[in-house]
Length: 308
Length: 256
Image (cartoon, rainbow over all chains, first blue to last red):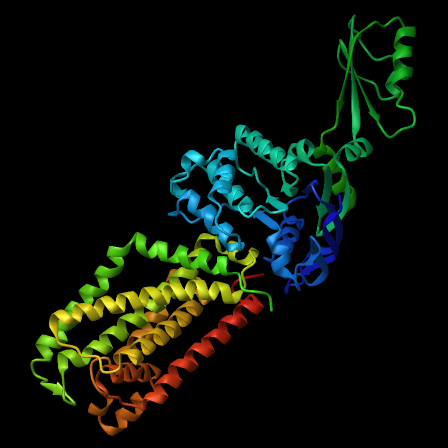
């Protein structure tokens, strides 16, 4: 797959001197899902807003599908759909008219069959004649997605798509994103829910203070930065961890459980040696389990490293 | 320059007209009621004491002024509200991220506002037939002045809507500037009825030129040359278009 978005040395500095985005370069391939993570004010929304045309950059270039966003903005914008962070809908307008309107704005001829398809896919068909003010928050967010998809974009920006929605709806949104991925839509999402990125994204980008700290495939990032914990359940309770094992970082969490943290990047994790030592001491292991650190922990570790 | 996004223009125009038709009776009832009141007060009560103005019955004489008063008010309020409401509700982002430029957005909003104002003006003209006999001497020029004035003031309203940061600001220009200019622009009298000094002052009022040209199309009577009236309204259209283009190019009150 070729690149669909090429961001080259993109910067945004406000009149006050605040650098919202500092020399960001990133290439996103067609059909990819990339999650942008970062604390509030990191520059995620600024980046999306520049690409979509809401904010004027102070430096750098962006090309979408080969179209420069400033010199060939019509070509670039036709390829983009945006689901903004804030729910903004005409309160008195019917759902179906809202979606038809957006399709028209993007220069597309009417196509009620396609609009019916996306409204059905988003479970909004039964509400098509309802005014948007009558809908629940989750439904309003789905209307925003329907509007963003109304002109069959190649790139979809989801700016915190599940902010403030309940767990069930969040799962539903993930389902929608999964369906879009299967249709080949490139998706760039920002989120505070890190499990969302872990669940959906092919790659994760971490932004802090306007700088793109890294971009890695999600699995690679987890492997590279992830720590794992080995939990060992013992057959017979212990009073204390044997001396040399404690020196290696083994902790007795309760009488029957030992915990051992290890780095997946290390050449030797020390697991085989630990289990061997336990057997040599006649300590019988009943069960073992491992737990990978979450992306949230990885993210916090990266951001704190940058701050240091 | 890229080709115009006609579907985009139609989407905005249709959206604005749908809003108008959703409240069609409120949209029409208010101007019609006002017109009837003006005819009762100015036509019957005061007009009874003014037999005619330059040979035209006073009740008929005020019809062009009444139509222009309504056109200006409606054009400004429809266009300013049309663009301000998306700013207020947050849906303005759609216009900024979609492939529509300043010309498409302006044509969509201003076109709809002008059409609404013209429709209401025509309803007022029909209403006036109930009260007075009105004969239109130059129908083509009547339509031309009506369309140009609607466009000019819709463009002005559009600028007000782009500029406004609150509903109060949205109201202040129509209330404090447009209404006085219309009343002092000869809606209910001829500038020639004023003393020479005040007639000179009145000619500094741009609205006088619109009303004068419009009244000429009805009765062949004008306070200023018709060519000057046409030039004034055409100049207003051009200046407003230039201002709107500048606003979109710089992103003033639209983009960060």
